[in-house]
Image (cartoon, rainbow, N blue to C red; front, side, top):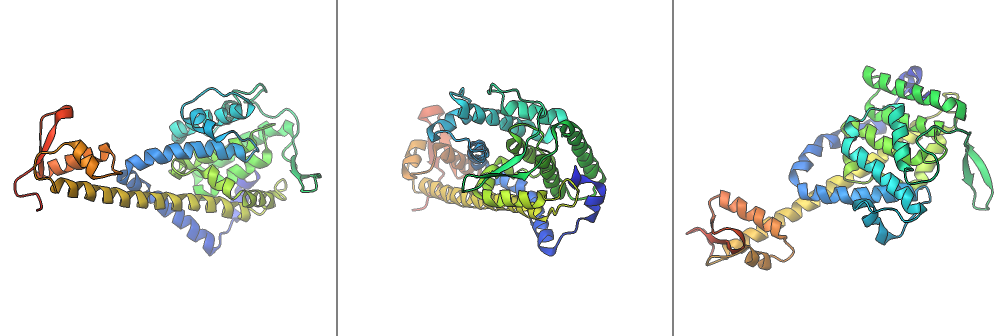
Length: 353
């Protein structure tokens, strides 16, 4: 709410480095569609990996861990949770699946936020999907075992009203174009975390809302590269940025720069990793295509898919089929028969000897 006050938004100024970062993230968003066309098979694999990493990292940031062999069955096969840690993970899994499936079309409303929180702890015995009933301080445990209050969030009795205000101001700022969405999304998330509207699960709900709001504005990298993992890998910077930018938040005199720099850094790191993985896969895919073509052109008589597969270790049967179809369309080879007994022949004058 405090970061989304109209006066606060109008006073924001960005340095040259920040403006360059915003431009770069915008360019990466523009390349997304191209990546989707280049390596669809890779994207499927990346989505699965990102889903597992997101559920694992977002919970591990809250000190919740489960045994590695249980991760994939629990997240990808929707197995039933066996203990408390698995219940926490399974709840995040379900909420994440909803965001990935419907995120771009889900409205940013109080009811939606309550629904996400309800999903996160749906397997837990404690009540969820409702605003906090008692005040909750953010406590830091020091190395010597002592505890001190790092931040005093909004009191419980004010939390529902402040959440409604946050949502209203965010939507108005987006509609009026007061700032770039890449500025407004992290501001909304900071305000959510400062209000701390739930007795538990605020960090996880905040990370799900981050994905959803980014999807609203076409920033889809979180489907393929886990933003939660990038945050976990830089968790000291994450907490430091939150602490710096939440100081004086209640008075609306906080410095948003540390949080924006951190948030944009996470997004940029994810896009760079995405581009790198796509480029590597595209190159490998190209190499595999060349190997299959060479193996086909080396044939002196009718051949089967299995023979080409044997000649190209490491290349999947599906990939061999794709290349054979391409070569057929190009008029280089012809097929005889169908099904398992199908044979292919190199058309006269085309094989290299």
